[in-house]
Amino acid sequence: MNRLRLRTAIALAALGLPFAAVLAQSGEPAFTVAETGRSYASLQAAVDAVGNTRATIRIAPGSYRQCAVQEAGVIVYEATEPGTVTLAGRACEGKAALVLRGTGAEIRGLTFSGINVSDGNGAGIRLEAGSLNVAYARFANSQQGILTAADPAMRVYITRSTFSGLGTCENDAGCAHSLYIGDIGTLTVRESRFERGTGGHYLKARAAEVTIEGNSFDDANGRTTNYMIDLPAGSRGRIADNWFVQGRDKENYSAFIALGAEDILHPSDGLRIENNEARFVPGLKRNSVFLADWTGERVVMQGNRLADGLAQYEAR
Image (cartoon, rainbow, N blue to C red; front, side, top):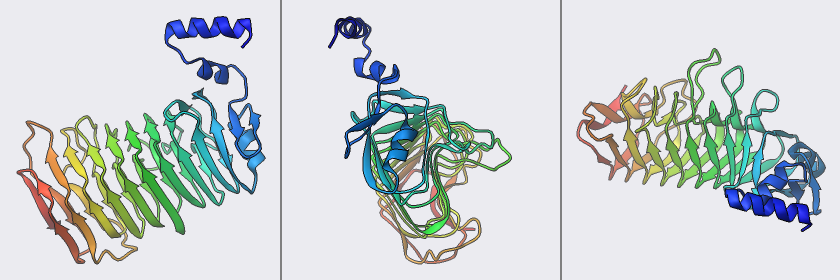
């Protein structure tokens, strides 16, 4: 390390700032393709270098006002240190920080923040083609966390991630949600946290099959929110071992989970909703329903622990 860098490092340490983060943001290459060892000053340049191959792009610590469009290949976007990388405030194509239409993508340890666009659908990730894995990611203070296209071949898997300060119903394009999944094949969400919603639903999915397990849906500090889980097209699968708390400031507090409230595209027979815990914030007394069902199909509900005032099931 030269003398200038050493002096800079000492000064930053005194301020409690990470040296690597400032170096990455000061113009040195921050995006490295692991398989070639080559580094790039922009995320888009690194994505373009991968092309129609499989590769991992490792991102140095820092906050980047950058976005990228992936047209091909399978790319892993990985923070070299989980939780130290933020893509903030910029959307490609007026859509998202990452617009994905390659064969597949995986997100590891990234934060997406402050993504807002004119039509109200600004997202951390817009998935238009291929499949997606997300782990240890955070989506915060944007119009939407993840938004996907409709493709029966598409698969989305999310684990140990946080969705916070997301959602809006204030735009002509309709509501945006913390997580908005189109008509895809399968959706899995495990061990993740949804909190502090600012409109819309926390999880809305038209997937044919869902696995939603071990998550927390904390609406205590939500504003003008709706359902915790909305499966408007019907769905099979399992919703289990989740924790739900409904807050005071609701656009719609009539149900925690909604099934088949719009055009029904998929059967729901055999959907299992079990071993969940649901309640209201302390001091709040109201009547609501854990599952509101428009399908009339056989849904298995067992082992759910519900607060007073919360009915288990209602046909609508």
